[in-house]
Length: 480
Image (tube, rainbow, N blue to C red):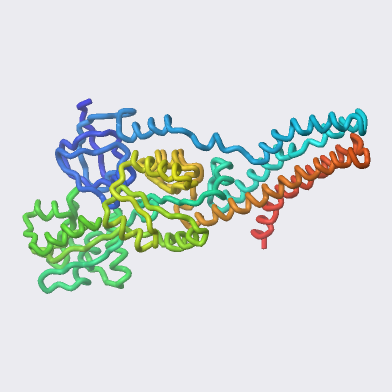
């Protein structure tokens, strides 16, 4: 420990440590759940697995490898109880529980139908076909899911989804997107909003970070014509300087303004305080060393989120948001999406505790999350869902991964679970009824061994057709 490492923009920080030199904007949501990037400078703590968005920093290593916060969360995951292993197929239980009654019945058949009847009863195998057709049904539904950009790593999770009554969402990165969007634009002096946005978008035009993309997108939406840049200089970790029509334009953070000795009026300072409380961030814009205004950036709700929440409500699901973000942005998101229950300022281990509280209250819980900070909660929940592009720990822990990196197929996952449940129930009938028919036949019409085998295999054939039918039907729909 005590070594110095250098991390550049776009790289993932590999250690826990303290910044010894430089300044940077760091995305910590995957670990802390905070929606806005954090500005970090000399003497401040940084953590492994967070992403350096802009800047360049030297880090004095304090913890590496298995000692980092992210790795310790992984250790907790290893010691967490795996709820999946206790969930068994209903059909397999029936098959196992029918063994003793079948043996007793075979003994009773001896004086009625002789040894042949006894053998026929033993060959009836009530429910035994389920050992073949139930896994076949699950495999076919896994294939249907994969063709709809849904990766189901544990088939039993799909079966259990039919019993879920509570869905819990992480906020940042799950219900919201990485790229923010422009909210209010605050102007000073005689500048107009479009002037401010035009200069900021022109300055950020060639930048690739989420803030730049948000500003450029807002300018395009307003159909603004961007002026040409005569000269540009990117100040790593602070912002950018450009010259447009012989005017010096600065776009960047408050620290950038302080470094350039730009005076910040009391009006903007008050706005900064309100934005911090609300979970917003501000990008400052100056023209010829005078602050011209500021652009407010909000977290962007996933476009599909409202329709997904509506679909889950129609299923009478109880919905929750658990977030490491502050109270106001979490409450605002919950109100906008129509979710009644939320928990803010939640530490990673407390997320898991909240999931456990819901389970202890008799809820069957599905948790949807994307960050390292969600991984313990993902492990605790009865069913866990993550998105492609989430942290490796989250996608490794989750039983189901939405491969198109969006929530739009979430309701479809529940639909597949319903269809699987119906298919398995039909499959159970095709395994139990032939066995009962076979036993009844022994006592009523002295059905022999060959007859019992024919009935058994007829049931098996019907069961296999039932298991395969959803896949056949799915492919027929695709071909039309």
